[in-house]
Amino acid sequence: MKKLLALVCCLVMCLSFAACGKAKSVESYISSVQSEIDTLKKSVDGTGMKLDVTARGNSMVYSFQYDIELDETQKEALGTAMDQQASTFQQGYTDLKKQVPSAESVIVEYLDKNGKVIVSKEYK
Image (cartoon, rainbow, N blue to C red; front, side, top):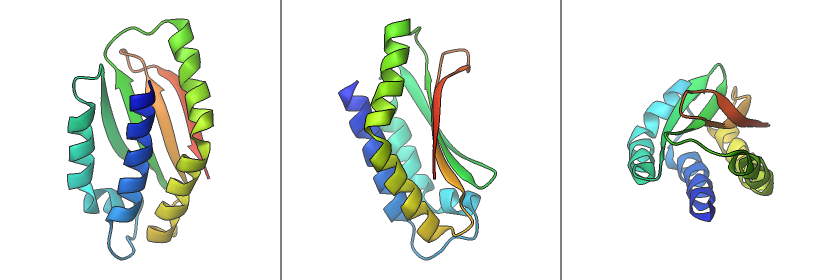
């Protein structure tokens, strides 16, 4: 679990500093850092989950989807872990906003293997 949180922190920081100049939209920002996103996706392979980074309106969404079943204790731990990393995700939003002034938020969500949201938090 700690390894996953470290990955998420690095992910937010890497993408937020990777783009040069200001992007006009969240989609264009994601396109400008696609190689970094691909590297992060590969680093998640083999951990029992996959990562997808997308734009949802004017928000950047990090979706972690598990390919294994989680018990209730593990699901609850995800929410607690996200709360502990809130300042990192908030900083990621601040950095995104510098690159994309119209950006509204960063959303981090964990999905079960069927795509149902386990926990989701929005940082503004």
